[in-house]
Amino acid sequence: MGRSSFRLSFAPLFCLLFLGHFVCSQLDYKFYDSTCPNLTKIVRFGVWSAISNDTRMAASLLRLHFHDCIVDGCEGSVLLDDTSTFKGEKNAAPNQNSARGFEVIDAIKANVEKACPSTVSCADILTLATREAVFLAGGPYWIVPLGRRDGLTASQAAANRDVPSPFEPLENLTAKFTSKGLDIKDVVVLSGAHTIGFAQCFTFKQRLFNFDGSGNPDPTLDSSLLSNLQSVCPNRDDSNTNLVALDPVTSAKFDNVYYKNLLNNSGLLQSDQALMGDNTTAAMVNVYSKFPFLFAADFGASMVKLSKVGVLTGQDGQIRKNCRVVN
Image (cartoon, rainbow, N blue to C red; front, side, top):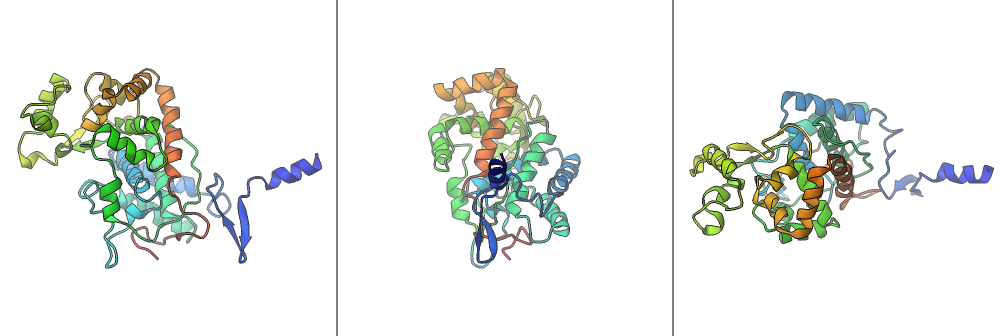
């Protein structure tokens, strides 16, 4: 008994003593329990105040985290401003004039620095903020493993290459996910993030007026939705940045209505509706449309997988003092 309890007491420590420092080589659910015990409360309050000011912010933070992780891993590169030595990700095509929430992360980081200086990475703050945002929007709560460190550079070219585009066919989207260790189920589950948030008209306008160069609307798009969208997004350049809810039924609530919309040919983005064009993904859409609790559980699991992509741990990277610049 004594020996087994001795062994168990050391089980959670995945650390080695290296040059006088403990080096923890992987993520850990209790990573900041002793060094920043109020971390979750600080992040939750920051996200709550941001969302109470702007309900869209929940979706914006979720998207920011996805755009961080899918490009060179979850290492906070999307938060870096351009410098003389690199062009960052903020001005890449998928992010320019659309990625938002940077000020929310800055404000949370400032409060975390006051409580626990030089301890918590921007990558971990964004990961936690995303979990809180989804939960506050009515979605699932999942336990986040922590201990990510911040990257030292960012790449506009990598963001342009790796972030999935709403214009891409399903096989391309799937390839971008699988290249990061995610799979087809993660594609369907994480697409369900489009249960909240808005899209700019230019991201789907070709479906309304000139689908595949035909000069006609996308024949799969529900006709009443089509006429609504054509009124919000008229066929003029000055409508390109108008906003439309990705899930018009419950646009601010994180639920499974996104999948019901797909079954009704009412997915907004071509890349969303494309999930119905493949037998494997369509079957999953059907299941998630019927079982909201299954979607909630699977979404949490896929988010944990996403949050582990390409992480820096141990002595790699750094703990930024300011999320916008490398120390």
